[in-house]
Figure 1 (cartoon, rainbow, N blue to C red):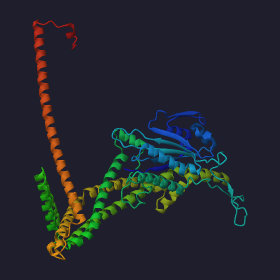
Figure 2 (figure 1 turned 135 degrees about the vertical axis):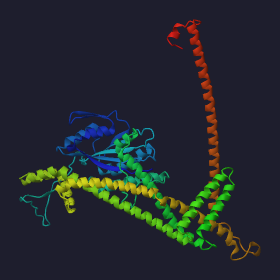
Figure 3 (figure 1 turned 90 degrees about the vertical axis):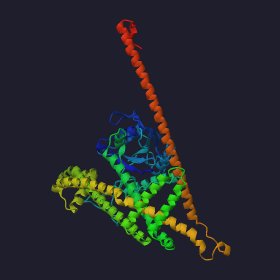
Length: 587
C-alpha cells in the first residue's frame, strides 16, 4: 500500500546535537569532528543504500567533502543555542524499485532544495525488515540552515535593517535609538514553503505511479483536510519497528494494526451502503414494470435459479443447495422482521441503515475531536512548565537592552510559554489547577481512547454488517428477476411474435454480462471444489504413507532392541567377549 510520510526537524546545539554526528549517522560513515575533537563512527550501521552531497552551481567544490561541510557549519555558528541544520525525512514507496525511488528522490531534491540554493547531504536507508516485516525505505536530507552567497562565502541567516517611516525619517525605539528589523534571508523555514514541499513530493510520486500504470496514490493532506472519517494511524519510527521485528508488541504497532482493520471494515460498510443507495433508485424503475414485484417472491425466484445452477455441478451439488437454503432462510427471516414487501420499503430500510452508520460515525468523530483537544492541552501544559524558567529569567533582567537581547535569544521558548498561558487561560485554566487538570485529562484520554476502540468494534461486529450482506443478496435477487423479466417479456409487447413481423428483444448487454459472470463463478466454484477434493485425497495418501513408515520404523526399533538384549545375555553367560571399543560405547 502506498504510504505518505514526510517530516522536518532541526539539529539544535542546545539539545546536545552536533552536525557531524547527525551526518555520520545518516551516511553510515566514520567522521572526525574537528570542532569538538571527537570521532563519530557509524560504519557498523546497516541499511545505508547510498549517500551523496548535492551542491548549487556556485557553491565551492570543497563542501562536497562531508567532514569539511559540517565542520564549517559548526564553526560559523557562535551561539551555544544555535540551530545548525534542517533534517528532512520522507518515505519511499514499496511499489517502486529502489532504482526508481532513488531517481525520483534525487529529482525532487534537485528541483525543490538545490534549486533554492540549499546544500543537501542525502542518505537513502533500507533497513533490514526481518522475516515477515514490512520494508521501510526512506530518505534523510541534512541541509545547513545558514545559506551560501553567490560568491561562494557563507551568508547570514538574518539581515539587520534600519526602520524608516513614510517620510524617510528613522523610527526610534524606547531609548531614542534607531530601530531595526531582523528578517530571515531565506524562506526555507516558513510553514507555507514546507507545505509546498510536502505537496510537491506527493505530486512527483503520483506522477511515477501514473507512468507505471499503478492505481495507488499518496496525499500530503491530513485525513481531516481530505474529509475522511478514518481514524489516523501514528508514525511508528525505527525504534518501534525494531521492537516489533524482534516480536515485542508495542502500543504504537498494536494501535496501527487495530486502526487499519477498523478503517477497512468501516470503509467497506460505508461503500456497500453507498452502492446500495445508488442502486435502489435505478432498480425501482425496473421493478415497477414486472408483475407481483414483492421482495419475497423475487428472492425465492433467485433461490430456485441458484439451485438450478447447482444441479449442473460435477460435484458438491448437495452442499451448494444446503448453503442456498440456509442463506435464503436467513433472508426470509430478515424480510419478515422488517416487513419488507415492496421495493419502496427496501429503499426505506437501506436509508435507515445508512443513517444509523452515519450517526455512529458522527459519535466517533466527536470523541476523536475531544481526544485531539485534550492532547493539545496536555502539550500546552508541558510547554508552560518547560519554558516558564526562561520566561521568568527574562523578567528579572533590569536593563532593557540586555532584556531585549535575552528575549531575542530565547524567542522560541518565551513564545511557547506565552502561547500556552494564553490558550489555557482562555479556557479558564491557571497554573494552580494544572496538576489536577493533567490527572483528569489523562484519565479522560484513556477513557476516550477505550470508548473509541469499543465503539469501532461495535460498528464492526454490529448486526448492520450482516444486514448489509443480506441487503446485497436481495439486490442480486432483484437484479436477476428484473433482467430475466426484461429479456423474456419485452418480446411480446408492441408488435406480436416474430412470425407476424414483430421483433423479439434479445437479452440486454447487462444480462449477458451477468450470465457470463455467473457462469464464470460457477466454473471457478467447481474448480475450487475439485481442487479441495484432490488436496484431501493427497492428504489422506500422505497420512497413510506416514503411518506405514512409522510401523516399519517401530518394527526396526523392536528388532534392534531384541538384538541388544540377546547380545547382553550372551556376554553375561560368557559366550561373547566384548571388544575394547564396545566398552567405550563406540559404534
